[in-house]
Image 1 (tube, rainbow, N blue to C red):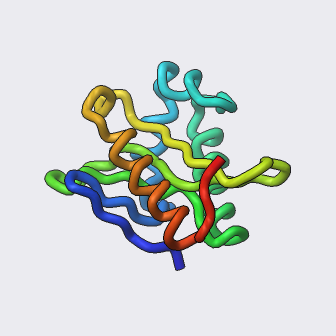
Image 2: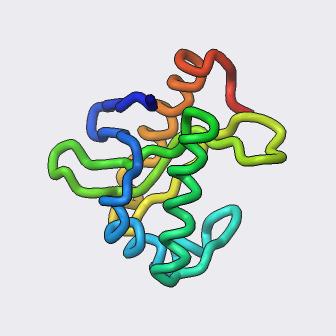
Length: 127
């Protein structure tokens, strides 16, 4: 089971189907979706496949991106965490945040927690 992490301002918890509406709204923003390493479509169906990909990755690998949630408000901020899809040369850490949460340092805060998790729980560095 993937752990829940807490930072000063964020909770990182497993993504679930209950995150779909917030996730789909984030992915519908072209400035968010077009900025990803592998851009995804902006439709609800595209968001569903993307969310399912991260949940499936967790089932296969035992780790994946978490839902990033603001501790003070409980609002969905985005996703972040360890990632190693098929054919990837090593474990990496990635993130995607809703534009309303850009510029707050949340990506850095979540990535630092994810990297620490990789070293402690996964006992290996990221690439």
